[in-house]
Image (cartoon, rainbow, N blue to C red; front, side, top):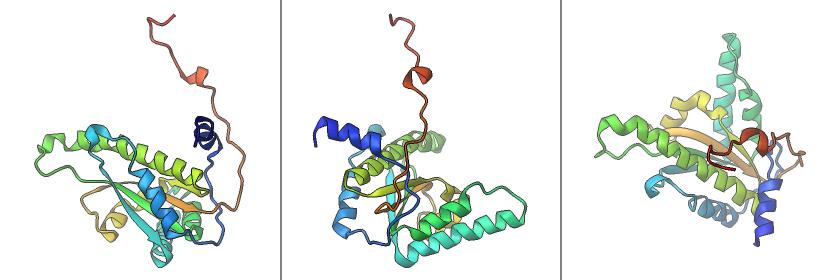
Length: 197
């Protein structure tokens, strides 16, 4: 891949919410995961932990999300896009749940909160790397934060009770080609340092 190809992958990546009914070959999924763990991380701690869900397990996650959306609706509470995202998870052939590993046991308790905040940046970088790897390898992806509505339930279910749930990513062959969503120009969101001319 040359420089132009890499920049094209960044420019062409979209959030995909409709996937083809087509499995992802295991070797391709493993390739996405291999690139994901090449992401930079604070102190090279590599705090990300990933659980790959397919088939019945992915369907169960979708049901858990839908059930929570129904409970919130019944209580008159806002569940945002949770029900919609549950349908995406139900359709996608693969959903990967990402956690931050719990702080090392030898770390003083007073540093635990800071550890999670710092490592969250690292796991965010891994998620972005996963999305770009998927795009480069011909897969569509969706970064999902709605899973946080069922944080405790997911951590217990997947055997990560002490880890911090960060997000999920659904992967598959895209069955849509969304246009780019509007972006604010970089000039509008960037300031030069005071000494810059």
